[in-house]
Image 1: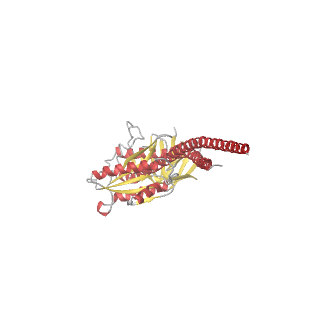
Image 2: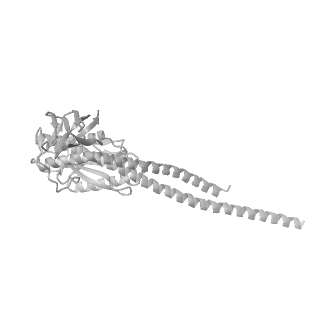
Image 3: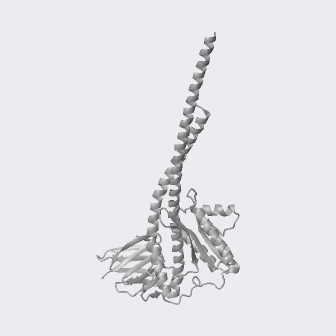
Length: 85
Length: 302
């Protein structure tokens, strides 16, 4: 089982793919998402989003001003400005 | 060369120059439509995600947000008009302005005062020509819209919406823009942006879809507070991208027919100049023959 992750900025889709874990920063603090997480909608704080791939590789992206939604193992990170680092 | 012939040759030359220009503009627009469509497609995931999230929040929590509640009385309505910066795009801008005019009449019949927000130099020019006032206008970049402009527009209209009527605020916001249907069809369209009709406005998600029970962080109202402006921005950005794609498509169509017309003109003038040249030659021959005839008759008399 894996997470399907979509990282989208206002004018383009930044990254899409399968991942093992996603760590993002919401206004409440950092949150780690694993497969099977409950459906959630959270406001994104500005900060780093770390996506751990199946192979253990980590993709880092900056995302600010947006929100994060999780449902049925689909994680969507939506930000006005987002870019891979 | 006869005067008539010279005039025709001049006209042919000028039609040829025009044709070169319109042909170049046609080709440029054709390549830009493709780019604009790509941008539209690239922005689609964002719009979809935002719309989905807003519909999800709306289906839960008793949505009672200032941006979604219908005001008891609507006294002033804002109309945001999206036109182009440059002309030579056929009826592109005038279609939108006409649509806005109709909307204005409708709103005024309902007893509402109308204020305007303009996007694109054509709208500004039209308004200053008709001596009408606009609250704010944005010029430049309509053929390549950036998200920051959309955000600026969204901030301005939301701020106006959140202001009281007495302090110059508005109770309703409409968008008038061209929607890109295909390369040959662009339809001017009116959308009521605010107050939001969230549930009906979610045309991008399937209506039968059931949303899971979301956990909201920090809480449903805060999430909605953050989401709605984002949704509005995304709608405005979408309108701008649609308008840009339509502008290029309209310009390509207009320039294509201009090129065709130039071709037709060149053909007609070439025909006319040929017959002018011929009649000139005929006249010259008959003059020579007449002259020679007169000379030989004169010689015989001696």
